[in-house]
Structures are given as structure tokens and as C-alpha cells.
Length: 179
Ligand SMILES: [Zn+2]
Image 1 (cartoon, rainbow, N blue to C red):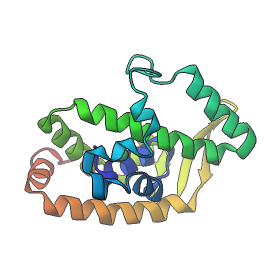
Image 2: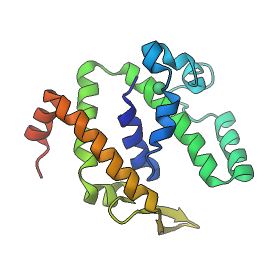
Image 3: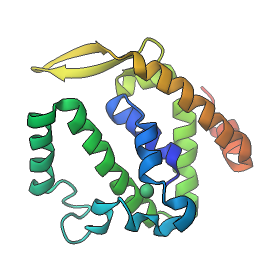
Image 4: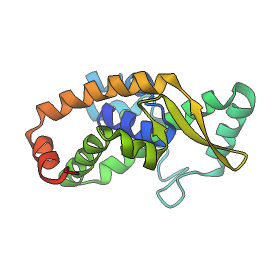
């Protein structure tokens, strides 16, 4: 399973929100069950090969389910549902990676999280001002989202601890993370 902080960094990049608590809650069973935790609250993970594959990650059933949530409960709830599903998707990809590839991706995300300028320009989340770039009616708009600012501070603290615990990550950032 991918570590919790990876899910939150990926969501910060994807949605501008980290969904820290959502991922923590979803992986709650991992404390007692380890990798087997995915038997609980990981429905999409279990449906890999039956309802979705890497070639077809977003089957109609899933798109339809999310559209219905958007229409009934609003876009914020639909986005939460997407975060829950992408968690399973990332977990499944993580299974396929070698330990070296996992470290590479961890190194990349640790490097990226401390680069607010790149987060703004490349991923469309201004973590310092608390704004998210969204496309509304074909136009790019910076929407206010003060939560992003606080979520970013929390995430940085967390990732700093992860980095400080890992000599490999520190070494990777030191060697390749300049500039
Ligand atoms: Zn999980």
C-alpha cells in the first residue's frame, strides 16, 4: 500500500485539496491488518480486473456514479468520491512497482511538496495564497480555497518527518533535488 502521505500529496496535485482525514480514515484498518486492510473500504481496489483495468481505469459505471453524486449532493461530494476512488487506483499501481521505483516516486513527491512555485504553475494549486485553478465554462479561474493553505502547512510538517526518518530520501533530494 502506498503510504498515507503519498495519497494526500497526489490529491493536493490533482484537486488542490489533500483529503488528509479521508485517506487516514480509509486506511484505518491498516494499523491492525497491514496490507490486508484493503479488504475493508477499498471496494474499487477489489474490483480491479473485473470492473476496471489500467487500460480502462474509468468505466462508465464509475463515471455515472460520480455524476449522480455531483447532481444530487454537489461537486464537493463528487470530488470526495473521486479522492476515495483514486486512493484505490494508487494502491493498485503501488503494488506493481519495485521497491526502487517506489522510493523514486516518494523522492519525487517529497521534492515537489516543498516547491510551492511549481505546485502553482504546474498543478494549479497556490498553496501560499490558498487558491485553486479550475476550468469553468472553458476559462481558467483561480478560486479561493483558504483550506488549501492550512492543509499544505499540515502536509509539509508530516512530509518533513517522513524525510527526516529516511536517509535514502534525504540523499536523493540532496543529490538530485537542486534547483
Ligand atoms: Zn489504502
